[in-house]
Length: 108
Image (cartoon, rainbow, N blue to C red):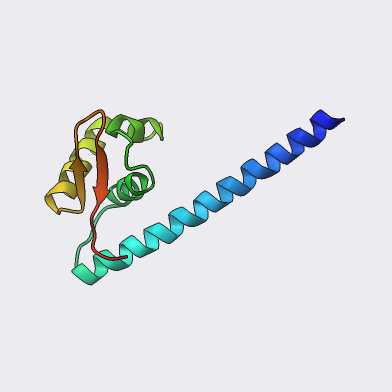
């Protein structure tokens, strides 16, 4: 009986965490979109997803992003990251293994 209660609590906690992450992601997307609009910059949905992902996971790698969704292609990710770097919205600080991504869209 105790294991059933623990499992229910665990399931509830996991659902709560997922809802919180989704809410946080949407809040971050809105803030980024507003900052980009103020600068007159338009980006694709994929580029927005990349910015949000690296904002939430600055020490993640490009492969971590690709692994996060089976519908993401390596080529599309590479070119989108390159474009975001050209726009100076995404920067890499440090090396491949110990570095981090910096989302730089101004104040948001």
